[in-house]
Length: 233
Image (tube, rainbow, N blue to C red; front, side, top):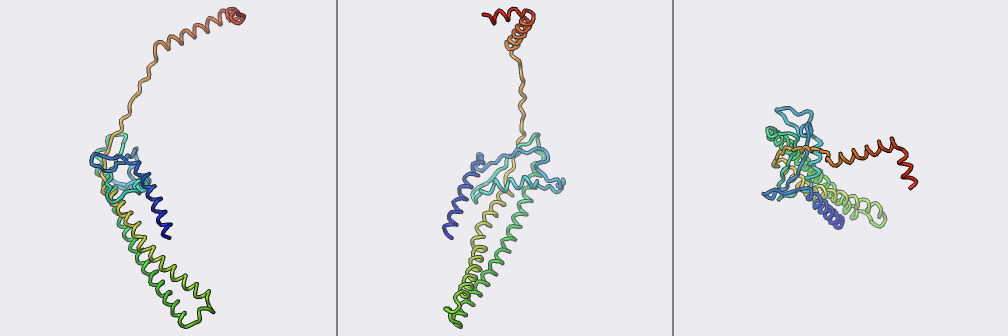
């Protein structure tokens, strides 16, 4: 059990290190992640002027990228837009804050429910464990080995499930809570993406070479004997 937990932690650390390479840093030492978003990719189709709602696809992407955030990390989202959208910055911050604040509240409610389930499992496990010792006192264990083993295993299953839900679950919950809080209060920077126009020019010497080739083709068509002479030589 401990070996599997240790292995999972090692895998998580490797994934975290890999995901952190997707971020840059600003002058304050905060993590910076760039998002290139076009028209209609920021807000949900149900968003209104008074109720900005973030796009679900964008939320899923942010969740996957920011899974590596820790307590000490602050994050800045640098959004590349095709046109100047600085007037919309406050709406984007509000939409992001509203969404992840709601997710934070839902996460706390879910963990509270998880703790209640864990406590119930713990009580059931203790009751089954008590039943196991009571039956050992009343009956001969050697004549009913399989029944006693089933009761013993059942009690440990409930107890381990309680430990998993309450004590191990709190680690995952705290990481999730930190991530949601960091994203909800992330700094938003809008950057207008500039498109460089490339002017294609034809070199004069290239045009001259093309003209020479065309003249040679015309000459070979008018005087086919020249081609025959070249081929005999």
